[in-house]
Image 1: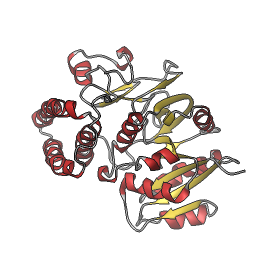
Image 2: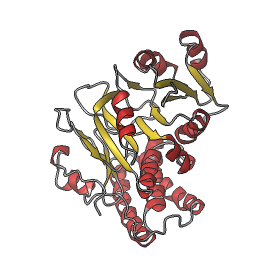
Image 3: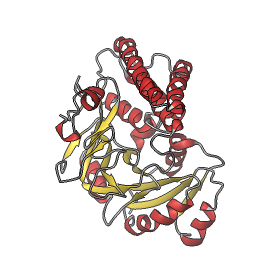
Length: 339
């Protein structure tokens, strides 16, 4: 029987994470339908020797340098060629049968391009995790948020999201894609390097006529901050820069200029918030993000000129929801693909 699913863990100098999370991934990701693969992004620690010594049976794809999250996965997926691929972070804990509901849903719904399980916190297992939670959305300025997470406010999982719904984006922490579609659309954008590249991919899938879903029948537990912690200026820079690139690439042409102007104003407020807290490294990261965005957008040109296709954002403004109205995530109306 030809296997349908490749679960690919991308590793870069992550021996400590492999040691902690890989044994369960190996134990619970096995069967006639699935293979577990480690793609190594040019690690300079002892990851590869540890893998060879402890899990010699695992297929390993070796790269000559760190290509980042996006290009690393693009290269790995191009080498494997399974009908479905699941991108799994190296700091994710899985359990028995975790992948099966995802594969079954993909097989039963050919109009679904990507999906995610419920993503909960490894350190607080009764709570959702920041990066993905119960499904990702975009507000009316393109800022990402999740069911169960609004900025620093995170819900406990009480079964309130035990459903399967259409979402705007699925988290790269545990992202299953239809491989042929992934390759057809060019995969993750390597210019993003890391952060928000999965959101950009999901936007392109939606524009191509596919659905993105969150599946509650499966759950995983994400440590988070495995590469860059929240509050790290490098992460701030990548998030702000890549979010602007995402908007530029995916907004219809006639909406692009106005939306990016509004985002510039909103990002200016974020800059001021960092500055008044004397967090100058993060304030400078926002300035650098905008400067580099202006340079990088020339790479794309006007690639989305379809006036009839709407950006898959909701009617919400999460800055107002959180900081003006002081709303809790449980008070948010999650509606995907609302103009």
